[in-house]
Amino acid sequence: MLSAAARHLGRSVRLVGDADLSAPTPCPGWDLGHLLGHVRSSLDDLTEVLTGEPGPAPGPDPAAAVRASIVGLLVAWAVTPGRRCEVEDRWISPEIVGYTAAAEMVLHAWDISRACGADHPVPAALATRLLEVSPLLAVDRFFAAPLDVPATAAPGERLLALFGRQPR
Image 1 (cartoon, rainbow, N blue to C red):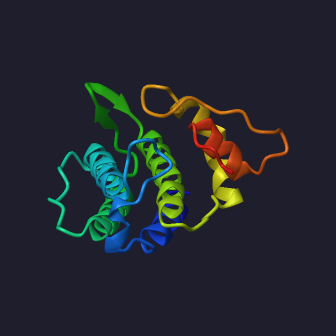
Image 2 (image 1 turned 180 degrees about the vertical axis):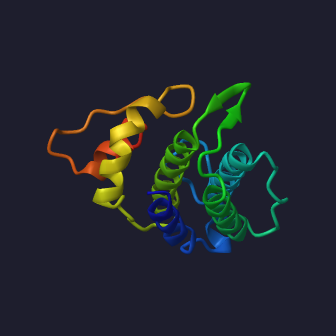
């Protein structure tokens, strides 16, 4: 699941050009440059939770920095099987970190693609897997309030709405 989420995010990040950095995103008040910085920082934070080590300092290209953070997270994930991770003096399993990272990547991949004028829907299989655990992750403290969608909505649309994104 984490690899699929990383591929989905990478696909959206490849759309980013320098001229797009000031483009608005679906997140009110955020431009694409700010969002890319947030995504990089979030992935680096999750990598640090997995490894106990801070990530590298970002370079001047925000899209390249996100790509580097994706790779860093995947490498960290590969070397942490069975390890407990510490967050704010609490121990959690790496699986929870993985689900959180996958949700971050999938949601922000959609945000980035929309800011770049593209529509990269969340792959149905990936959305279905994330919907199994996402109600535990979708807390108002971190994401926008859930939105209502029709019961017939695709899994990706339900996932986006759960995290406060208007899928259409």
